[in-house]
Image 1 (cartoon, helix red, strand yellow):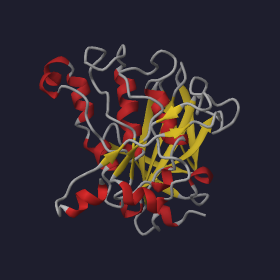
Image 2 (cartoon, helix red, strand yellow):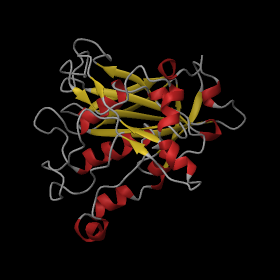
Image 3 (cartoon, rainbow, N blue to C red):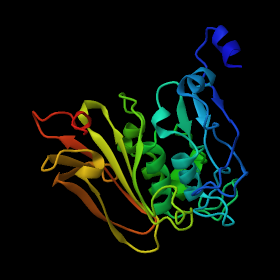
Image 4 (tube, rainbow, N blue to C red):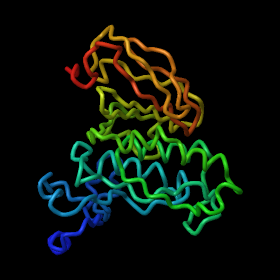
Amino acid sequence: LSTALNKTGRPIYLDLCPHAIADGVGTEVPKGKLMYAPPKEWTLSQRRALANSLLVEYDNTWDAWIYKQTSGLIFNIDAMVQATTLSFSGPGHWNYADMLQMCAYGKGVTPGGGMTLNEYRVHYSVWSILASPLVIGADIRSLEKDHPDCLTLLKNAAIVAVSQDPAALPPRLVSQTPPLRSAEATTLTITSQTFARPLSRGRLAVLLLNRGQKTAKLSASWAELGLAVGLRVHVFDVIAQSAAGTATDSFQANVPSHDVAFVILEPEAGAPPLHRVVR
């Protein structure tokens, strides 16, 4: 199919839904379950030759944080972490976490009881930093009247800018509690995750995700992010779309339950690009 489309000479975006088998480790359960994800043996060159993006999910996206205890938003996040190779993300071969189930609050055609505004913010922000294509699954005709706060979220230019950053560099999981692929780390037991993505102009996007039931103080140290000890950086709050001071040696935030702190770290004037001082 990709060969035939290329022969047309027309710019056509192709997304494919590959199938793989769960290995039963970490969040890939149960063992032997069919997943919508590229087989792990596929190389980067093979993926690039197939399509512009490849679907990655344990199950379809639903309008729910958890749906029937076996799927939902956090299951889709975990599939992006474990069922694909995040470092393979790039122009012409993106990892696609499926359509955004945004702003329906359980009243749309997609199954699920709906999510809170905080949870929709998690949805949009994590898709952004993980460089998934952003495909809105909402009736935008009625959003301004029915859910203006969620429409404002969708129109957050800073979230979109991280997703569409011209450097087009891949993201990574920085840390997770419990640790990735540990026996304790199931989708329902993971309480926090930290993601990072290098951006253009030497900047670094960082997202702290609180999956727990209470507000939590989360942090990402410079050691975890690969930055030099003692380095001072400017902090830009992606959600608020405003400057948020400076940070040295770590970024910390009190993150509400089922919410994110999402920032861009920027080098000071004259300082080296942040993702060139990675150890």
